[in-house]
Image 1 (cartoon, helix red, strand yellow):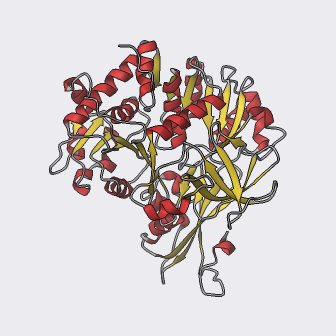
Image 2 (cartoon, helix red, strand yellow):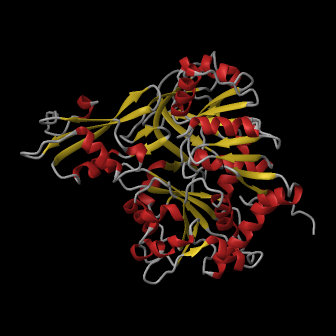
Image 3 (cartoon, helix red, strand yellow):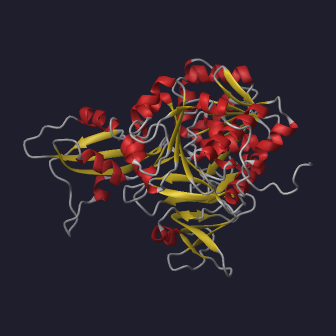
Length: 521
């Protein structure tokens, strides 16, 4: 049979790559690698194994993994069985992992053996979980098993599985992924994306970033962060190679890998570039093979540009802005970088952005307004949360459509370029991640001796916003900010831990007696 003419599912690109370039390396992780044929075969077998264990079209499968070699086949296996993959940040602690899995009733969990201290006991805490599969040390099976669920090592599962799953009947409007993001109430909310929205988004990103099959793309960001996830999706879409790193904790090792593989595409956030610039000043760096550098999460400080051009002498530099609810909103063409300082650019290809007043009226050029987004990349909504969905997905100006009302304030110039002004809620955007003040405040108040806690975001040139906490001690308690930060590392993901904790005798209050958050900021 010839290749189907209509390729609209997210995993179709992997089948194309396995057919066109079976022996080309799809993913490098350290000294290990998978060719396109191997990635396709492993994901086929894992999909078949999931079907044997009762996973059906529409079922949710949690992927709680580091950027390990097993992570890529796991993502595509869930898609091939018609399931919905739920990426969970490997820094997540047990309570939040349990909340996410219960919130969307995950059917199966795929994890790494070294995450057993966090994932252990999950089958007993989440009644919907009927299967746990894990990569790495088989000895972790005991810690990951539950009273009714026996965890299974992936290696044995793949060896025993059929070569391919039965066709599940997936269509483009079916859900492909649930991506959990912080909410203002403290509980994360699941952003629903279909095959259609994610396939469109990856294609639009490939187009404006000018990617090609001969690209070698680096990813140092967790794939639970959609910026990291889309590096894999884009690479597979065009048949490129992805060099996957667990993190940027050891920059020298990453730099060595970049040279070893002649990386051509470098995605980062301001914190990554700050580390690179500091390293460059100690000992000059140069990566002439890199053709594209992309930045999102927070605006790239203009002072970084000159040094980044020294580090990447042949690269185009893209500044971008996005939301999990629509993946990406805008990008600034590299040629406009100098003449549009501070801008996050124009709408990505195939989409439209516009500004409206709080009353819904059009906003003149240069005036502040609330950002609205149109396009096929919009989420379906928030999982099992129609009230929150209705607050952000509004009826559009054209009959029958919904648009994304971000709630964030921007201004737009005569060329359609956007300039971020402020957020409309108290969610903190730091290092590209969303942090709920309520969640950090609850963690602080769980520490003995803390009577009250307030968490705010403060401007930071590298992080976008830094998380800062203020606490009032209980009567007779003595609080040490360093101990409080340590306690928080046991309760929260690292990016949520405040950069600074300040102990106060009392909080400032507004005339109506509420805590004055603005005064604290």
